[in-house]
Amino acid sequence: MLAAAGNGTIAQGADDKTGAGKSAPKVSVAEVVEQSVPDDRVYTGTTAAVKAIELRAQVTGYLLERRFTEGSDVGKGDTLYVIDPRPFKAVLDQKQAELQEQEAIREYAKTSQKRYAAAARAGAAARESLDQAIELEAKTEAAIDVYKSGIQQAKINLDFAEIKAPFDGRVGRTLVNIGALVKANDTALASLVQLDPIYVYFSPPETELLLIEAQQAKAPLEVTMTLPHSTTDMFKGTLSFISNAADVGTATITMRATISNPGQRIRPGQFALVRLHIGEDPDALVVPAKAVSSIQGQRFVMVVGKDNKLERRKIGLGRQVGTGGYVVESGLSKGELVVVSDTRTLKTGETVSPQREPAS
Image (spheres, rainbow, N blue to C red):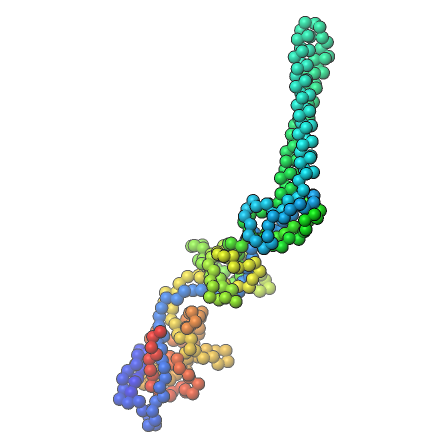
């Protein structure tokens, strides 16, 4: 018969009979192995835009044009709306004409100064006329500075008649129609969001903070994100923010990852599953998931021991390894054999005929 040696290996015996003369039931077994296991923690999260704004006019006027398709991608500097520029152009023209008038007065004052100065030296003109010409020039110089400032502001207002995208992003639906009066810094026109990259916020328990911070200090931790409706599509990024305070109500710490969003398939406000890669455990003991049973919240396995006798053993489990195993924290040793077939009819102390399950 097959027998398990003390080190967990299967030994050959004379037959497959139990002490009662019955054939020992065949069971599939697997070995508890030691392997390198990634230390990944999984959390739920919510996506958010890196940049998100409401477009608003900076001048008051009537909306003349909309130059985008709702829901389309736009580039930084693209003109999205045009407010009727004619009132702002008229103000600019007026300021420029007033500046030219003052510059002409200044030139007259300079010419007058030269004429009165020459006449004063010859005794043909009063000193008062020269002083008046000098004063006129000073006044026009001050007026010219004021009009130049007015021209600069008029140019700015004229530029503001075109509402442009401040960054690359996707524009939402328009909130105003052509012909509507929009008010400066008041009327919301549309929303603009940046979709690539995108943020995902999640909240690990505060008990994991020191470990995460220690690993993050070495290098930004890798993050993999999936969406519930498409768990095969994985989006990758890095941990980019750890909050400076814990949430007292939930005993968690808010963290944020910056995720690459090619094709802009992720939208702000979506529910997500976040896998944070903290590091590697090079010597982890791993037991197959199908060997583990649960009784009243406690985890057990059936171990094939000496003389192929079964022992139901309580174990402590750690994180899941992929979909096929668990890290063992207590209760098992490297090389022990555990039953991976149906254990519901098996009993402690029963003699079995263990059959190695082919390696996957």
